[in-house]
Length: 360
Image 1 (cartoon, rainbow, N blue to C red):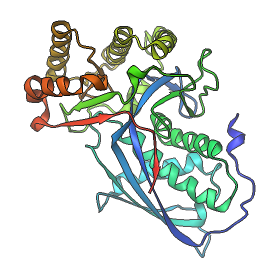
Image 2 (cartoon, one colour; image 1 turned 135 degrees about the vertical axis):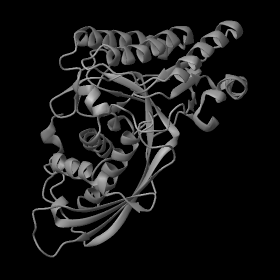
Image 3 (cartoon, rainbow, N blue to C red; image 1 turned 90 degrees about the vertical axis):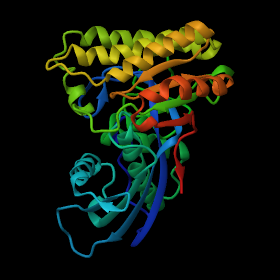
Image 4 (cartoon, rainbow, N blue to C red; image 1 turned 120 degrees about the horizontal axis):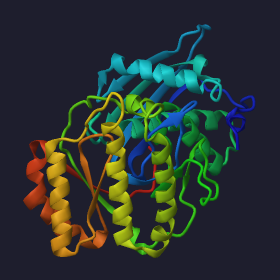
């Protein structure tokens, strides 16, 4: 499969106007992707849990234009309010994907979107948001090109979403998605994410992720800038090898259900991600004091209770508390008694693994 595989044949049908809508989830990486090359291609393979309750709902209205103009016509509304500051990102996305969706210049678009979680707070809002838009656009193409298979639809949706936000390609399917070529994972690709192709132990069924909202503000350094700083990072090569090795180590864990090794890999990956930020030039810190307090309390609880709870972090201060469903009642009690005080306004989100995007 190459980029050329996603350039469509001439369309068999035409659309005048209408609307499409999708709900697309966020995801949380277990083995992290940090560093890219080319056009949104990953320097190392990653694997993520697809979430369920953290999602973006997007409705795309389209209308055929009667005159030919070079500019795209896009209006974006977030939670009912026009957000012109977000529109340049969508325009950039359209420029990247116009080769693969040649109808984009033929329509004017109005996009209405809303998140079930705070924007720009370390939950992957770009992943859910860009994947939802990609799915809406591809739904238009499927109506113009009947006969598109479900497999091709998912691959192209992931491919397009990646061009908007790298991690967005992992939000199409679930509950486990791999993105990036890895020699031990059949079908893995840098071009799009794939559903994890092997059997997974029942220990990981409906795995829980309670997200502690330590900081709901804008990040001081964007993920895009963070990725760019990996180009000249003194430890970049070692980091990419570490991620590859950790994904190799994770494969038998997912099969056999060894939660102790799972914890070791996942927490190491989270801390390695932030270590890259601490040692880049310029260096930066996205964790907050409360992030570290939560981590230490999770470690103490796990030792005292012989629990299988662990944490991971995305590119932000919020803490994803991961644990098997069998521990849900005990861990939620622990969170409410010991960790909620370190959350902004005491807020947290209860989530778990999901099956991917849903057409509305």
